[in-house]
Image 1 (cartoon, one colour):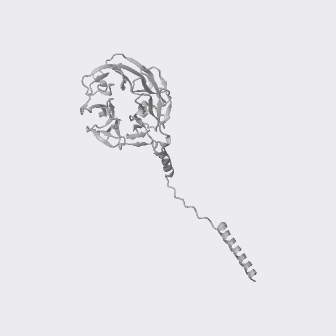
Image 2 (cartoon, one colour):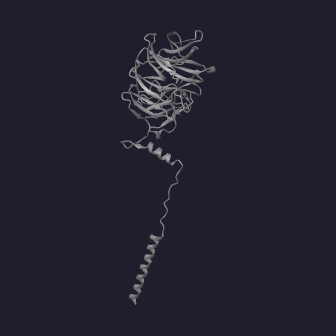
Image 3 (cartoon, one colour):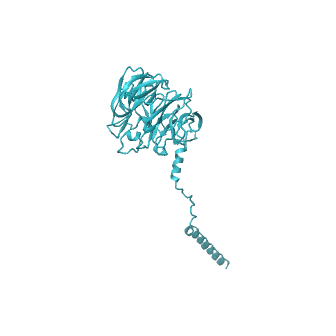
Length: 390
């Protein structure tokens, strides 16, 4: 009897164990996995994190190059200040000249002179003098000359419509139109316009002027225009040693290297053309060679050693655009990528990957910090000053 009860108990135990096993592994579902809800910008957030938290060899986080605005409003004439650690720029709101740090923080007000309707600022090399072009009545322009050392502001005479500075920055070079004789001349004068002297007669309306660094020569050419075959000329400040460096290039514009041995030249492939290119030539116009890089020199900056060019390459240019006219006149805005070009070889290096360009930028008048770790430019689309950490 005892054996029979034991056998029945054993059978019940086995059946009960089997039922529990089947319930746990065959019928009971596992608990659902709890997931954090995704937000709409999760992909952007992940991309941003992956781009800004790369690790250096020492294990410390490394921030990738991103472009950030360092001004809240439009500025004019932004340049590296003489100390190499700050920036000079004119504020659009009140026209005063400010000194800001690389983060955009106001360090000092250099001049409280209220200069309204600023179009462009022309700095001398020491950055102690600047000529400011303002829009006047009926589309005309007028200039005011600021001497930061003497804290003076002097209006230049009417008829001045293009300005630059001598290599040393102590004399002003300008184009003057005489309404009585209807003649146009290139002249040199003191910063306030006094003690002027004619350099040479010229026969075109709009002119670009640039001294040749390291020499007593000045180069000049017609303002870049798609339907004008430019002639780039050179002459000494005394009016002697006249020469022609370049001719027959439509929409041509120049940017001399700091050592004066090379000029970067942008131009279009044909009259009224759409395709642009960047080329190099030496100080006497020889050794002209294309860099196969479509841009304008107003989007480029030389390094101090004259070995590299930092340039923005315009993108999203409409097929019907006439260059450089439509860009200069504000009919189109570009979406740029950023590059470093080695002059000796033409080798090109991308400064920032496309996915790291956090917006559309139409770069104008770029310049570098002394250590070449920061590239600054004005965004032509909104007028603000931007910084790219390299």
